[in-house]
Length: 170
Image (cartoon, rainbow, N blue to C red; front, side, top):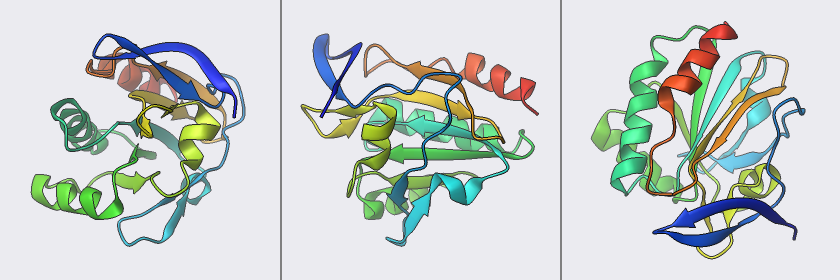
């Protein structure tokens, strides 16, 4: 499998991203992940909408939990936008987290089984089999319009830049 040349660190130490990082201007690659009910969820299930993909290593960490809560809060302010949080957490863990945190305006999916998103979008961390932190925005025509991969896994993405960009697509 091809390694991604993007430099991402975990605790200051470089990690290896697998796959080729998706680029702005390219056609969004369909992927399959697992929903909280263990059924397949595809990117194409949300076709015709702007989609924000919020990639997190694990909702059981503070920054990932904050990122997921932030996008859940912002979801009600956006029209015709679907926010999808994806991680390699088990679907049961995502379901538990959402129930405990009142996450009900976004979709959470697990890339644990196939790492289809991680490989196709270049976000899979080889050393940990977790996803890198970042944001991908796909327009209603399935074009990738925005990509941010956070350089240090423990840092937050630029929420304001992503959300401002999404508003230009509405």
